[in-house]
Image (cartoon, rainbow, N blue to C red; front, top):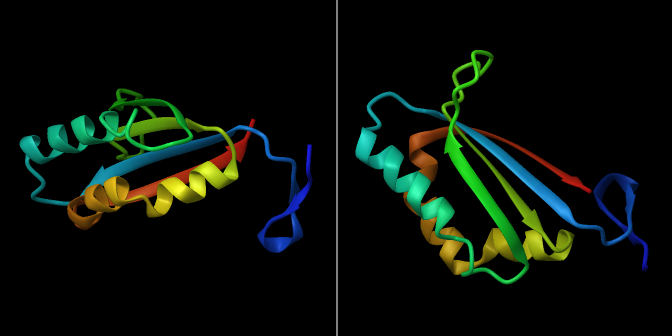
Length: 110
């Protein structure tokens, strides 16, 4: 498998990538907006090449630290994750979602 050099000089080998995220809702976000976000995130599946699996739901952990929605996505590789980032369907979601959330993301190879 080819070896690539990522930012910071970290080497990676084209492995599957896991993208995780969690959102804290900003004040005033309605239940309808929260449900729309959840639905649209789940509906990304099948619309973006290289996105293999999508899971998202309401966080019920007692250790949530205020993060109320979480999700996990599996991608073929880093190139697929990078393509997802700029894909028009994802950008459309972000256009209305970003103002409503304080997000945290973690991405790693598996």
